[in-house]
Image (cartoon, rainbow, N blue to C red; front, top):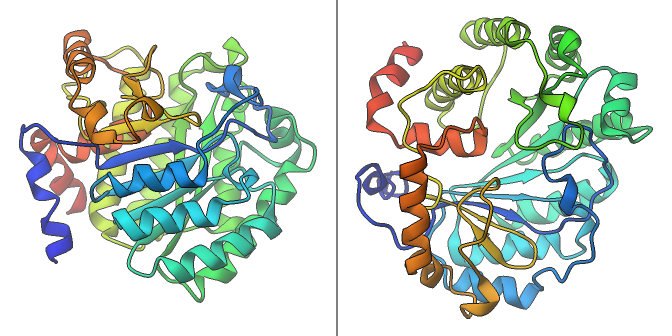
Length: 355
């Protein structure tokens, strides 16, 4: 109970010394070539990624984390991935870990997750896998032959692990794009009925994708799927998170509707927490308020790996002011989610969704 109470202060409009919701791009190396990817310009470039001892220095100087999401690129391409999770667990004890993987390495995933889940016994853990459509369509969008089957094998491995580690939540993300908009309902039903994960999420293509056409979608096709998803959640067909499921399902119902409204160009009153509660670290130590911001706040290597120093810097204060002045309205769910959750203005709406 105390562990949950500690986060209540972040609902107040007070300065914070460091982010509590952190996205860490541990590598830009990737096996995928997704046509809707917003990070495509940075993929598979020569990089000098933070080494394990640098990551430990960062972790030692960072406070408790509500959420740490490890992403890329493909995180499983790092041989020291298990050690990275163990370091953050030792010094930061996140309430929930997240791993975003394309599922291309099922055997490696099993080995790493066995180690990590055994070593992070007080944290929840969510692993997200992507599916963009039935096998042929999925592999066409991801431009990797056999990607669908490998991802399915990864899901089966995660289900086996969940039998021993109930703190594990298995998530499947469907990214809506121009290329699969006519197959969204079919894809969702396949995942729901055949794959049976704990959670299914719909993401709308964001940023500047590799193929600009990816963002050309008919909102009504997205809305149709959201309607079916909401019906399934209310009827109990989708189990949900292994922790606080009713609260988090209610929050997700709202954020997907808000994301679609923003995609359609509508305005919503929602204060973005990027640069305050949310931060992003890229492979070479660059710190950003969000994935889509144009320039870094600073680099960990220039600040003795002290994220708090960067967060308290004049540059960070300037960026936070710019985010407020710009009234940023992106629909990236990794930022909408904590922004919505920590906005008291949405308490009543979330409560209504729980009834």
